[in-house]
Amino acid sequence: METIIVIGAGAAGLMTAYELSKNNKKVIVLEATERLGGRIYTYTNNAFSEPVELGAEFIHGKLPLTLNLLKQADIKYYVVKGKMFHIEKGQFKKGQDNSVHWAELMKRMKELKHDIPLSDFLQQFFSDDKYESLRESVKHFAEGFDVADISKVSTCSLYKEWSEENDEQYRIDGGYQQLISFLESECKKNGCIIYNNCCVKKITWSKNEVNIITMCSRYFKSNRVVITVPLSVLQLDKNDISYIEFTPAMDNYLEASKNIGFGTVIKILLEFNEAFWQHEKKNISFLFTGEKIPTWWTQFPKNNCILTGWMAGAKAFEFKDASDEDLLESALDSLSAAFAESTSVLKNKLLAHKIINWTNAQNIYGAYSYETPQSANARKLLTQPLEQTIFFAGEALDYGVMIGTVEAALESGKQAALKIIKG
Image (cartoon, rainbow, N blue to C red):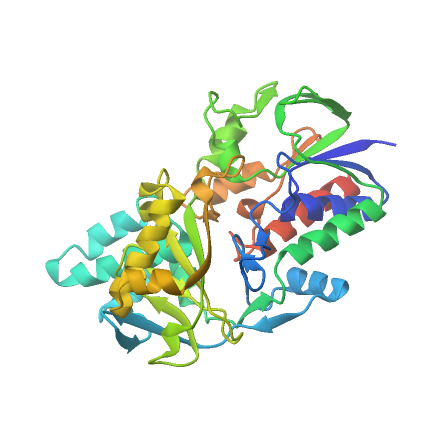
């Protein structure tokens, strides 16, 4: 019986292993860290009153694969409800403060014949002084939600995303990690072997033969390998500790990976002794500010006192070397300015905090992918297996509209497995 090795035990890797193993394939999974899940990371600690999400948090619409797996596992989920507000110096405004020129922007984006980076698009069509507010709004939105560098991100992809109707969003009751635990359990039932703390360093391959050496000098042999590491790992320089060496080299594949964007984010979880944000307004879901930590959300409709801060894109990269202490201070200062409340009062209300800087997370180095004008060609190459021996999968490689999501990771893993099963 042939052996298939899956590198990476995030959503894509475990989904690949799940599909292969239930089709009676012998599967070994190699995970570089001590935990499974990758950018899914539900944090359980007695300091918090309930589990909190350090990584993926939302299900962005009625996504068939994710919801079907949750149903199989009997994992409950609920609709995200509530209102969005912009807050400045204690003053609430309904919704996000979008520019009056937004409709004109969307019209120009729709008419664009040849895709270009967003910064070039804004310079070409919206460089006048009267559009200054619009440019700032667009930049913050692209960086904040899409974690994108505006000098690289595809204008056409943003138009497609921004123009579509917003589906309902959901959260998993108890956290996304339950989905990872379900896939892990099913894989093991099907005979998969999963190795933690097994960081792949070198892959030597020829048709139907793969030899793998890990950083801890372990040796594995298989007939095929599915590589599901984050896109950022494929983009690494040869001198980086997490760089994977391929022999023979696959420079065209690794170069192609650099034509898909990969953003970054810092996430800040705070639990207070009261939900002070409800003093003026009720049923708040999202809060937007003009502060250093610009975006916050609650757990509504759950009734708790947890706030999540979100700093993404170029702003997050500026703080990639900041200490957790400095980031906590910035978070409290941002809330202090937004709510017109003293930092010392907020500190006294604070019960628990947890900060994760995904830029510095070893073997991950970022948040999730975004489209560039070159992404389609890069994805076309990366989804073509080499000699039916080396396969790639991950959220950056799905052809659906949900690039950057758990759904995309699951679907990409499933498709990689099906290519192997069908031969």
